[in-house]
Length: 111
Length: 112
Image (tube, rainbow over all chains, first blue to last red; front, side, top):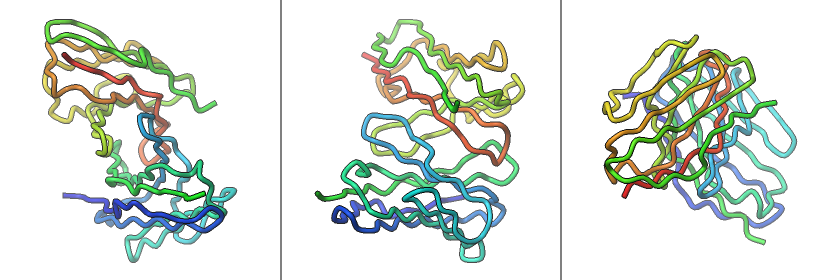
């Protein structure tokens, strides 16, 4: 059974701090990795995608991928109360239309 | 434009009703998906259409019937649903395998 694991949280950080969200996955054949933000009652919103080992930055967000350790993370710099949401890690089963989602980490940014 | 449009946003139906959910994308994506999401759970794959053909059916009960009229449209026909089918139904699309998956705003379905 292919799995994606995330700490459910809640992860509480003060406003302006760096939030660090982590995800591990079991399928070594996975080649594409995604982070989604989901507010309560809303649909998931894609915020980052990463395909190669290393870091990828987009504004306040940095995704980090280590395929050898089967680990992907998301850093949110200068966290804002509006970042409070559940963050879903998703991993594609390589070459398929199947995306395995983690159970999500709930982030709370305290003003 | 990365928009996937779903209608309706909310739906309440009885167990004997027939209703349909609709989804549209104009990104030229070749794959379209239906997911079901219960509260505090991750999205759960139901169906995938690739190039307008059903590619994946995750053993979904026959009371859910998908349809892909063309490359931009995806429907989910609902019939004789059960209260446990109440959930957020999400449509999504992607250019292909391993590609970014974009979700619509979802339909919050309540079955009474």
